[in-house]
Image (cartoon, rainbow, N blue to C red):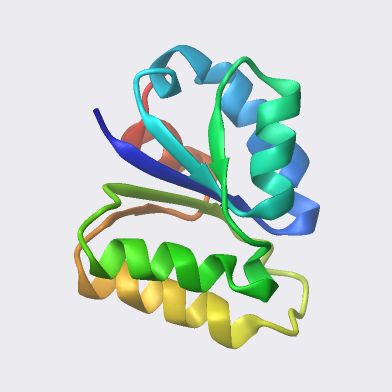
Length: 119
C-alpha cells in the first residue's frame, strides 16, 4: 500500500478533485494525506478517506516535507499553479526540494500523476 499526499494550489483544486474521482479505485488502495482544504474537499466530494494536515501556508507543506524526510511518504501529487504568485512560495520550494532530495515519486501535473497512479 502506498502512502500518497495530495496537494493543490487554489486554482488547481478543481482539477485535482476531478483527477482523484477518475483515479478513485486506484487511490482507494492507498493511505492518503492532504493539506487542509484539499484534503477536506477530497473527503467531502469522493468516497475516499484523507488524513487532513494543516493548510499548506500554515504548516501543511512542512508536515508533508517531514513525512518525506522520515521515509513515511511514497508519492507526492502536487498540482501547482505556475501562473499565480504565492506568499508561501518558500514553503513550496522546500517541499519540492525534499521530494527531490529523498527521491520521492513526485507529480506536479495531471499527466505525470496519471502515470504514477494509473486509473
